[in-house]
Image 1 (tube, rainbow, N blue to C red):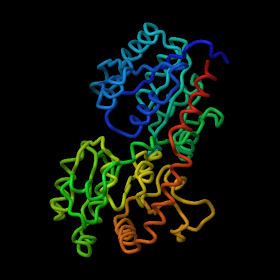
Image 2 (image 1 turned 90 degrees about the vertical axis):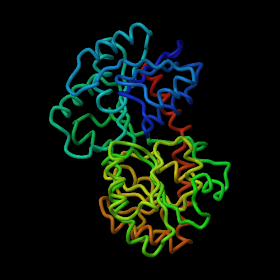
Image 3 (image 1 turned 120 degrees about the vertical axis):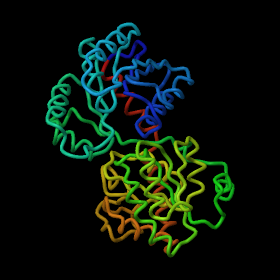
Image 4 (image 1 turned 120 degrees about the horizontal axis):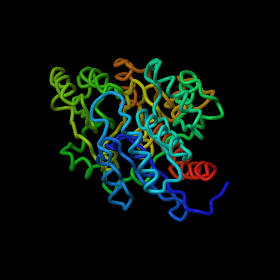
Length: 382
């Protein structure tokens, strides 16, 4: 291993909207030791809001403006090769499927070591051609980083990659982004919420994966018993209009606030009483970790790496107070409704889960540990 020269890393994404993997990149480039590592970003399609933030910090963000339509585009690989050579890149780190595909092809052709990150479990049996591509590209990949043990299990099962090729580095969060200088009352006043409102919240792209329709389905019964209940839906996406129509059809218009994409999560967490994550599939949700760090009792579906975070090993699920959060089955509005009722009615349990969850994230999922492990891998690749 040689670390005598600056390691210039090219991170490859399709685009950088507000999202978990994208926030992880933002925190990574800010956290790497600038005396040893230089970071540049390649966005295949478009820059996005996180891309703008990264560029404002002084990092180079290159936009190829490709992948505007479906289908393969060999010009993407050629453009990334040219970028690697022009910018004198010494290491490539790719993220998510299409960037992993084109970025690894380019790194191989340019004879530059490459690392790939997988941020989500596979939602269903992957297409055969994707499995074959991932298997082939893994031969030329120094290491594949999985954001949770469940993600690693999917990679080994479907892509048939050697076990020693895949390393689990749990997704982590910047604890400062979960904090707020506001009181609960101030945070609620900013949103036009009554001080005595019962506030639920969730953070995520408005896409099928995140399970918002299940959360909305759970609300009508809750509102019968808790008429002051309000739900903060934080995020944007292709299903916004569909979810707004669902909310109206269920008579939830005055109870649900669609807040869109926000960067003041700490203040929004401060306004909440309970955080919910109803995802249908997931890697290891950064929004969930951030809410836990903020001291919110958390209800989450048993998908991806959720159980690894929220459940204490060898403790029965029914012993709720011994765990770090409230885990329920996915795609089950009744289970979600009952979990919310339990935490509303049992404030002692809610407070126990809030404190235990916050401690769990601070001790095991802070970003500093992630950065240290990543830097070790980067240096070993050289």
